[in-house]
Image 1 (cartoon, one colour):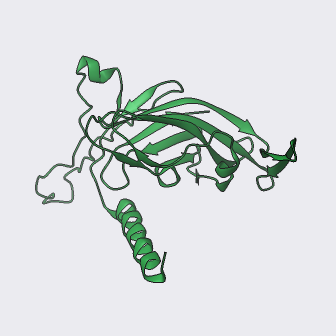
Image 2 (cartoon, rainbow, N blue to C red):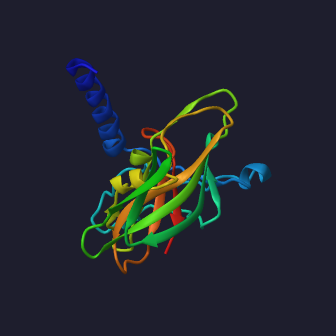
Length: 215
């Protein structure tokens, strides 16, 4: 890839990332997969009143009712109608070990490499399945931008590069109509943290976000 092509692709990624982070969008709840079969309506969001501002200081201003975010559990599936996300399981590891085998002269040799978190941290391994429910459209899966983890204090933890060392990592790329892909992702989180939630954004620009309770 030439320098001009690299700069062009980088600029496009920055525009998508900034747009996703700075554009105000009305929140839409993802639904449990079984809800699509029973036609359960989505919760309606409350919007601020369009009435004129108070004319006197004594008039009370009421704030709009806050929307309660629906969260999903391990083993449940969430969908925006296009994709289905299932959180299969999770685990905590002190390190990620990558093992490689090679055959030399008819003999098999194995080598291993440990990928360690920083001090006082551990790896949270998430096992998920992503399925394209559309019958005629291909979707592009980008786990490094779509997935995230947060804790009760509000701190967020990004997709770890240690994912590359997992035996069954979740690969990105095109997901054809009706197909699904399963794999693991790693996140580097502090030890003894609580209130962990796993989030998955169905689309990078205009989309819904599924929230799963972990711990």
